Image 1 (cartoon, rainbow, N blue to C red):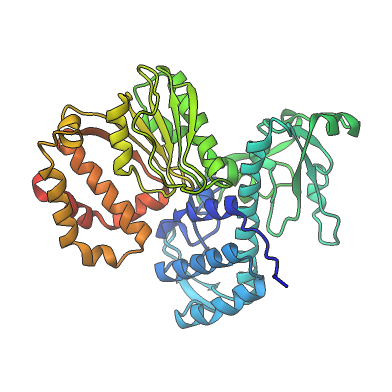
Image 2: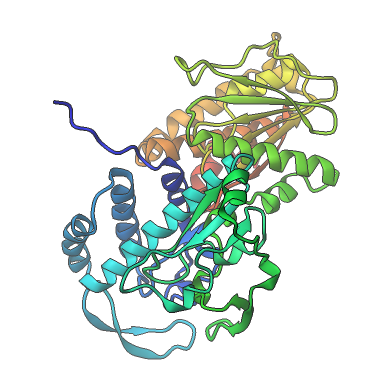
Length: 444
């Protein structure tokens, strides 16, 4: 008999893998890395060594991907942390104050906290992505507290309350709301809400208290009963593309930026349940006009060169990896006459945008008078193959594509803007020299 296995929680995995690493000076205390920052960077308090932080993250990733238990996580990780010397109590220097103190590093209890916090947070972010995808059908969320001996009495004030899914209060009380918090938010249809007989609560009526972070001095308003370090919504921070879109389109209208945010968020959420390339065509102000999908049998198939794009319109595509453009997308901009093409990374929010340059036709069109630019780039790639091979295929691909686009920009084929996820930003920063060698000194 075939053994049934649970489906992977792809939204939760995508959220977790989108993170970069917290800077070394923000790893001593859990208060150093604050609120929404946790949605962008991975951190474990007192894990000051990069190899220790990487080891913990890799094991969490494997555990999340495979659905393993806390016991399995501890069994796999304990000997590796002990080998690296991150175990028991040790004296550690606080980089903020310069003081040395005896602190607890690895222990079974700490690993339980690390496991529980990261798993609950990743699942909460994944659930929030699902809430956003289905909120037209489920416009309300009900806060529910699990009935158990260890439940927090401070969370009882929210138990059973219903708020509209778009009420800003969910940016502060979406569970978990503390370490080992077992609360959850249950979606409700309009009919379910009406039949419940419950009143609709409003976030503006929720009492708050000021909290001063003793490490940073930052003062925030925290809902009563919520742990200050949990008074944010990791899924909302992960999905929010406002900053990235504003950085990508600094000179466009607010209307165009709003349209792109909506399209990009939709494509990212869609990727969690549909592994296909997607292209959205827009009109002159950026409003979506039509959506084109690669076939399910061939999810990576290139889009047709005659993809219909309205005059003055653009193309927005969903990438299957976080790496920026593939070659056929740039060629698509040429053949369709699109004003621009933007790619959306599936997990971490990377956005890339290209607009036609004066040499686009020459380099990518039928004549290809300057194809030697591309050939030279391929030659430099072959020279750097050993360095690229030392990286994962995903990272090597991301670095090569970024360098290739910089070459095309310097050759006048495109104007290129890239807003990477925190993970990719750190990857490019770590391999600046390799990218420079791929681009070529004459083009820097």
